Image (tube, rainbow, N blue to C red; front, side, top):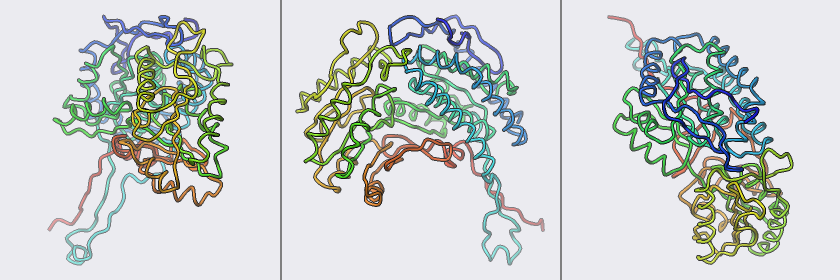
Length: 489
């Protein structure tokens, strides 16, 4: 396929590895074969761990001066940026993402977050004095109390198909900046674009063993990484189901685990903001086909405005252009696989069985005989107990629910096992913000949104553990050591 990344080998501890097993990459837009990636053999994955452990323990990167780490990582990112054309074409081919989304949200957004993380790290204290109890000072027992933030060690980063580049950048760059050695394992559905990080490591001069990029068709290698005693931390973005398995795999060795998992976020429209609902609904499905963990797939509107909102959202979805993601006119591409398309259809059917009504969509677009397409779908749900209101769909399906008053809106929004994100819209910003403070979720956007190295994101409840981005995202890749220093007597 013209224009995509040419590398087909994986990258283990500074060397390119030929694998005996081929990992086939499929284009979800037309079901064509994109490429075969040489899967990392089991021995290669074990070597990646051993070399990462050795590089960290010898301090070849962890002991490098912080300004030097920053310089190398900026060079690393410069190389990624220089591969713009190939990366955008690759993401479009392997993930079915419209080119504009792949370029702006994934590549440009990921690079901005990564460079911001470097800058943020440089402004944060990584060794600071801690208060000493007065009695200890008077007796002369303790002269100094110091709190140090040190790298965790060997970090495994496991990334999802819907954000292969942006999710990798917001994991590996903060982890590397903190002095860790990192093993990146991308989704088997979209491994090709992540190989750019191997060429970037070579171009920037990262020491061997500090970064590896492994790929596999199944999950055996991932299980090795999440259970290996030489791995200190696992950072995973993906489904709650897989997150639970990773927790179990990491438990015997008591690893640190950071999880960004599923969501069932709500977007709440106060009575004075109902006119914004159609645009909010489009944002859920355009570009990503609803395949975003933070997608606000539950739309909460005042009961007496529900019919007009359903009509407006249905008309907005009718205007979406579904089709080939390489066509600039396309606003929504396919979901990632036949299995994901089937899941969307099953949940829509169950929603109807439970009393919901399909207002728009619900099936496969006419005229698209190949590719894993799902119509942009609007569901009118009678209550929040409906399967389409409780289960993460990961497809272009939005559920509209009515609420009686602000208390009822908060009750419905919080009535979920998830808590990743949320949105509140209202002309009265103070009222909208007051409502947002009551939502049990890791992030809430009030009339706007921000994606930044300085703004943390993560989940409450079954949406995850820990935070990415922001100071908390840096600290996630660090241990805290306390030093009590006194005179020898």
